[in-house]
Length: 266
Image 1 (cartoon, rainbow, N blue to C red):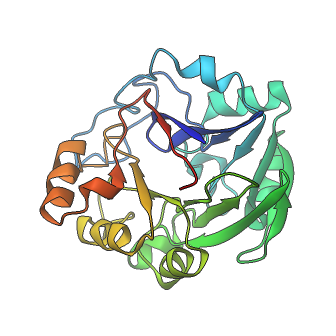
Image 2 (cartoon, rainbow, N blue to C red):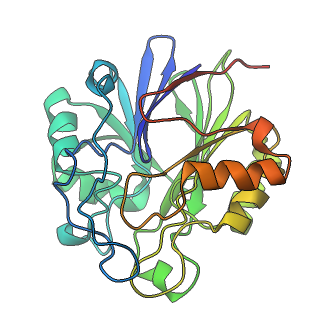
């Protein structure tokens, strides 16, 4: 398996003939508004460009996973860091099949996305010759998660390949813990930017929770959602330092934008 990390939560899983695009944000640097104006510096998003090799990989896409997209079905509240306008155009032009949680399916179809799999939490479905399971993802620590686009993580198990759990935009919950302990993924992907908005508690895992996630994960961890959005303060160097202090850096990949990881089944 190869994991092509592109930017933020956008990456491509390469398995044989399959190129599975995850949470595409394809906008050019600075073309989206800030996600925080007061708590964090009000830079326009994304704050970094896509790597030069991005579309060489993206254009090979055969399938797409979208962890979350909308709140209350309102277009203005779409989470553009996981599905933005250019990504919608790309998916529609390519007629790319998409898997999402059932609650997002009608919304995506409304805007011309080809929904191939509507997933129900914890119910396995056949997927590319293997299986996929949707895991609840709680996008916030307190009241704010009810206003956010709660979504799904995805566990993929395909023949002859490492299993992978993409936790999505979530804080550490009993469902996340269950996915790590019961599904025992070979690779676990964590959104590690510690994002917060101008009001309310963090909407992603805190650094303490990320450490817990890495400790609980049975094998390798990939940390993403870093250094691409103005409301995500955690940097790669900060994360590396904390994980090194906890003797966890040796089981964690923190890829740079444009980096490709090759991970075997052992």
